[in-house]
Amino acid sequence: MFDVMAITELNTRLNAFIWLLRDTNRGPEWIANASTIQLLARPEPNQDLVHSRFDAPWPIRSRDMVTLSTFSQDAESLILTLDVKDAAESLPINEHWVRMKHVWAIWQLSPLASGLVEICYRGSADPAGHIPLWLANQLLLKGTFTTFVKLRQLLVENQYQHKTLSGIQEPSVHLETKISNNP
Image 1 (cartoon, helix red, strand yellow):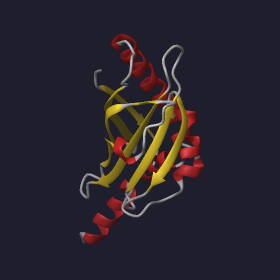
Image 2 (cartoon, helix red, strand yellow):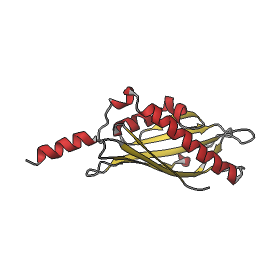
Image 3 (tube, one colour):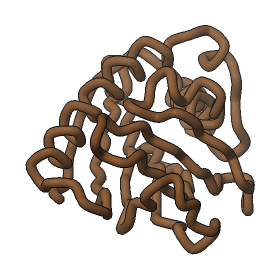
Image 4 (cartoon, one colour):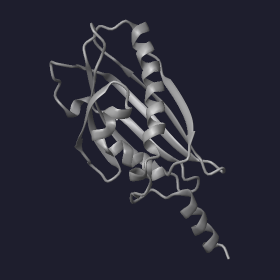
């Protein structure tokens, strides 16, 4: 298994990204091969413990994973980082799915001078079970591309663009605060 990286630029708000991720009912609409995504817990206001199930083409068995996502924002650059770690031990294994292992990902949303936001994703996971490496890598690349195409479509929807979360500051608000603090 290898790491994958994808980058795009989009006219969006930083808060919108977290709101889209937390809209687990819509997850299967944009996360490639996801059949269900369920929030198990929110241990802290900036954390989500999530169980995700993924369909696989026959004869491969469907997969699942449990992850803990934590978001944070750098006060100066306003870069929003979502750190995703494997949390497989948080939920018993179900015999209907193969539990993915060594799951990790980092999403970084960087405000750009142009007003756009650069969205960078890096991640990897061991699909576990019996699956040829070439097929696992092919599915990872295709899935990442599909996810980014659909992410670009949903992230700009009004229902995500107008919500805010405590702890996430938008670039325009940050700039206004700096200007008013420096006479």
